[in-house]
Length: 535
Image (cartoon, rainbow, N blue to C red; front, side):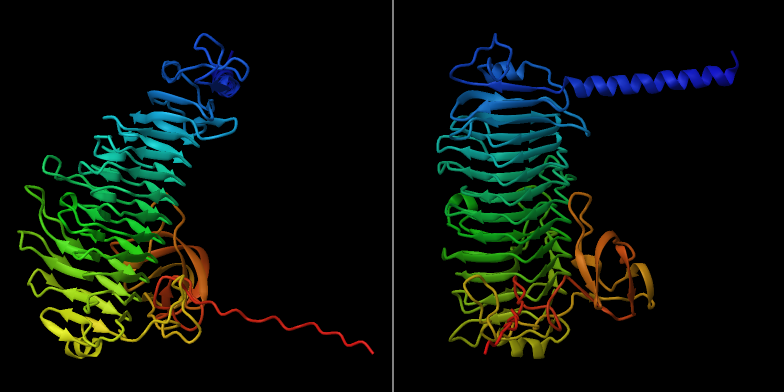
């Protein structure tokens, strides 16, 4: 036999082996059932002969594509420790039958991957966290209840930490109900990067409802970066609401409703609605409201160092098209306690509606040498019955006073009633309509193609490999961002467009310019009546 023939036969054998292995894996995918009442661990795990315990489930080796279903109405006082799947097929855990979600003591994924969990309630009052994702990736928790009861002694109801990446928490209710210790509802820390937290109801907790923390004293190089925090309702009547801190950078926080707050020793008596003391985050289209504790703040860039941790800094963030209202003390605050290395600079605030907060000052920027070069463009600052709404580096006055004194850092801001409805949408005639500014402009030469350069790419996201990139308007054209080169301000689009040097670039908008606030006004055009006249 020739060498070519031998090679050909070997290739056929290898291909056949791969096909057989793949077929065997697919064929082995099965569905197993668990019933805490009528099951038996000596049974086959079928729908007619279910297993009984989580201990039995934890002791099994499952294959990619397998499903393990727990009977609704049942309860199990054991931590669920999942098996891993593969990139082509996850191992799935879910529910069957009717009634309440299956109730399990907790979920613990350590060094696991490709696991999907849906329609299960993880809840306990012990020393176990209801959900822990540790050094794991591609774990999905969907439509689950994750509740730490009043006697639970863990730091967080949901932990995600130590190099956990590409995980997704969506459609879940997450609470830490203990009031006797410092706790978070959701805590991402120590290299929890590239994760999605989407469409959840998060809170309560005595510390923060949702906290992203990268480093600490023992791990000063850790981060919490490139996470997407989207569409959540984040509410906390027991403490602070949300925090980006300790090198939590390059995250996108958008379209969340953030409200509530309570002053306690567990949140240093400073119940911040949104603490943003990290770098290069995009904070947009959020509603931040109703934190009426006397020491509350809305969007806080109060920079400091905690104990012996590296200092928190607020640098390079892009904060645009948010609504901040009904906050008692500091709707937006930039300040420092003087800790070495703490600084707030190069933050850009654009098209935000900050109005009718309870203190007269709608913006407070402390006079300090480490707080500098922060820019406010086309924002609305207003409080009914008060003209002095600005406290900026020792200068008190109207928006016009501050803007005239410092036109480099304050441009196009207005002081007028926003005239929004109860959903924060501009009413007809609102000054917010077309009152915003474009986010940036094209700096490359005019042409046609998929690559442009812009003056400031920090307003946009390419999806970070975990969600869709931003859809943007370039001039009158619309396209989706595929990639961003942060070093060169080069943006690669998924669609070819024709553009001109100087074209405005923004998120999609109606009218002649973007609106101020979190909700874009869209005029409803009445359709003409189709009248028929009959003699």
